[in-house]
Length: 308
Image (cartoon, rainbow, N blue to C red; front, top):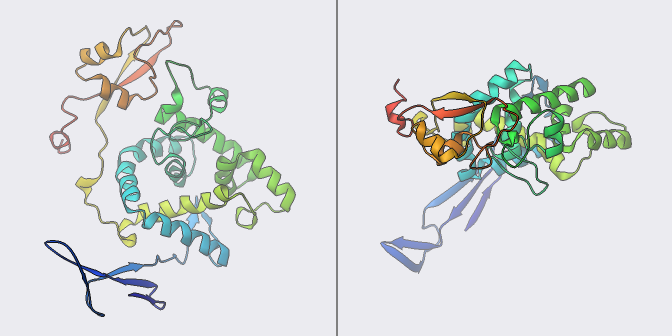
């Protein structure tokens, strides 16, 4: 039986089969079975992005936000994992945003862009901030077969900040700045010229960009108050920051497996902490200085250092 209760925005599903020990194909009589309730999501009365008000009085804006809240609230496994990972990576991203005077809400762009993973898109955009090779090199990142700093969380966040600040100077608001990160400034400018509107909420955009800011806003709402959307996680369930230190090198490294062993770790963990190192060696003919992140002793047993 399917019962839709419109007043409470709830859908009640009644089970059709009974389970007792094993699978039982006995059909239940009407009214029997355990109800499974799926609730709608509540749209807040007020919402801002980077201090700018979201016009929730507009029906299309409310419905677009509702779509992304529903999608991410009920994508349980993915959203729970994102909340856990944010606890590890947000502090590093927040610090870089703060140093560059970019609003804190932009950390949610990294969630929307890559799911806080070192993702590679079909277009070959890479890392947390999904940087293309040309863009990364234009902003000073090293990209080659041995080193690809698009995978470096702090350095790629720095580049994202520089791009965002340039966009803000062009558009004069953070909302259009966020849209331009997804569609590119040329793509946004084309639509502004065509539609004679400069407000994100008034523009007809391709589906990805049209959904982009609302997805970011959905992450903001869910991450800032998980319990309001049904996510109950204890602090110990969140992925903790890993205690690390850095070692500076300005020479070649013949074998990173040996390098890792010499510093009391292994190749797997070395690459986890330094995903921008793309090979098992580093030739470094220019004797460039690099900072290698290494784990503190005992880091793989969180109980040993969480209480420090």
